[in-house]
Image 1 (cartoon, rainbow, N blue to C red):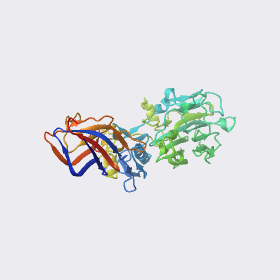
Image 2 (cartoon, helix red, strand yellow; image 1 turned 120 degrees about the vertical axis):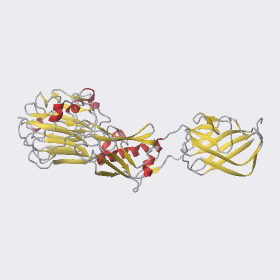
Image 3 (tube, rainbow, N blue to C red; image 1 turned 45 degrees about the vertical axis):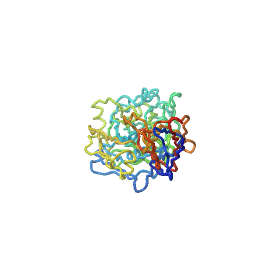
Image 4 (cartoon, rainbow, N blue to C red; image 1 turned 30 degrees about the horizontal axis):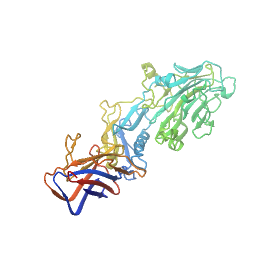
Length: 515
């Protein structure tokens, strides 16, 4: 009986050892796997300044412009590989400019079936989207407030409280998205300023968690992004996400007339990784920027400490509160729009043609809000500047053209697995220059497989395994042989090669039949 130890410091899992004396074996000798110590490289991959470029060219933009961005400079491995796809997703979503075709669009980059999937989806431009997601299972509209008609108002008395609130449990879009309202009526009542007007915005607390209180009450801190209109002579005030409340915008409401389509339009907009609050008004050539906030700075740690939901992926939920009575304040229910996350929210709206058409009546405003009207894509391509990055994600080329036959969205699957996403529960020990009597179902034929071992790692991340019982397999040698070279290799269960690091050691027991 002979003990054989094979070692290598190579990275391909091949153990090719020469011996300085013969290893003599009788006819029909037998061999058994004894133990192994192997450190599988965790698929370490570095995004550097010379391989981190990403671009997107599409008729969503204008068909010719190439919008470019950069991935973060990070070292990835099996443990944090998903963060690379999240970074790619964030980078692509930041590339969307604010135009007719981009509003409502959003990228998602995920692993599906082991392969990388890059895709866009679109939240339709429909008033019904807003109505559906502020009621039922998807939101709440409290007390005397109504949002499902041509007018958004509350039929109760004027109040300084948040009793008349509508809030959605669905997340605001992560690409290019807007939440906008138009004033339909704005008249002062005899009460204090805070019993007049309305407020709306985006909260980073899911209102569904506040259902125990009736009405839903949001603290000033929970009204993360807020725009508030009070009396017609009071300047608009806002919260810009920084915890400073009711900041004076220095801009007073401009009420053209009761029901006028030229009344002020206010919009929360997600664009380029920022939240903006913008005002459109009659006879003003340019939109008025109320504030802008950088989401990566505002939300560096993510929702519920989830590292994949930082920055632009921070969940934000739209809300609207009416303080004045119906006789004093109304919003245009046919014009109001909110674009939700199409991958997470309830966006299968049913919208009438008249509601769609009415949404585009912007009156004689100077700068006008953009109406989302996506067209079929004539060009749709994502380019990853580095082939090594593309291959790490499973692609074979840097230029990724959409495979969506309808050309309504971008869609691309990698032909190969995302390397860092590959997981295996067993390794195969195979002899390369010694024939043994073993067979493999995957290849449906003879294969010199000696053993399969579980990929259980110790505290140091190394696979150390010892056979609990020696199982001897017959060598295919009809006559005595002498060996000075034994070559073996370690493979994944699908017979692909791992990348190893450090010293790999494999021990075998060889004996003559009958020993």
